[in-house]
Length: 322
Ligand SMILES: Cc1cc2nc3c(=O)[nH]c(=O)nc-3n(C[C@H](O)[C@H](O)[C@H](O)COP(=O)(O)OP(=O)(O)OC[C@H]3O[C@@H](n4cnc5c(N)ncnc54)[C@H](O)[C@@H]3O)c2cc1C
Image (cartoon, rainbow, N blue to C red; front, side):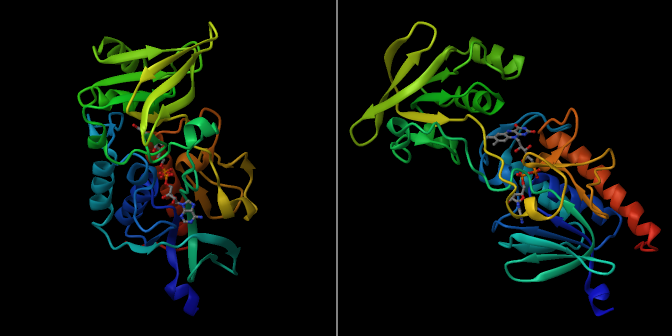
């Protein structure tokens, strides 16, 4: 009974944008909520991987930086009492008699429902695994960008053809002296509007069918060797900075051992965002279902469903906070 008294109604694993929004929604129902987050700060990928990049595709907010969005989410969530366990990784999930127990590095937290919003787990950028490029990391080569001002008036090469790469290139248009964007494939895969804007920008050069062979320089990068894959030619382009944005490697970490049905690194959920474990739900980048799109906006919708499912389940147990 002591454990029951101290138990959270909902324990959220992962304090990224989706976990934060879930905490707010649970607070709206006056449910007792805790977030367990392995890092020292809340905000997930938006806080750690693109704090300075504009986000254009969250409903009702035409443009906001990653960190700006996290600040707004925190403000929204902290309208209600919210317990935090920062710098604690959820290592184990065990079923007690009526409760789940989430074990972290420091403590064991009993909870009636668990919502997993663990995103891509650790933030591991996909690397080129080319020593001729990677040895320049910290000396012109960037796998993570935390301050766009560092690129002011620089000649920047962006490697990648997806939305993240395009977003970086777009954010650099008003700042960088020049932006060259290369992609291995025939076509860039980013939003059509980003493509049109990049093509129209006078300081941007887009090169499809191209790969980065090597960076050149003495102490820092001063040029890049770019291989044209369609004609097997190599050209040397002067650049000061190289941003490699070819995606992230999902690493679910400990939760892969919790008996959840997984599809690759993702947790399978149904339309209620329920996992195969009772009273355990999931939302955001970590989930798998047909048609899943990895966006903040979709994660917000999923966690709204997950919180509602948890609320209904709690109500069926006779737990309401009205
Ligand atoms: C460069 C870049 C640009 C992007 N731009 C956009 C954009 O413009 N618009 C958009 O909609 N999306 C964008 N995205 C995608 C967006 O960041 C993700 O869809 C979003 O962050 C998913 O949120 P989440 O809360 O599900 O996961 P995450 O942001 O990954 O947060 C999950 C959190 O869970 C924590 N965690 C993981 N495992 C554990 C554990 N065992 N115990 C405790 N904590 C744990 C992690 O530390 C992390 O803080 C971008 C992504 C990148 C990399």
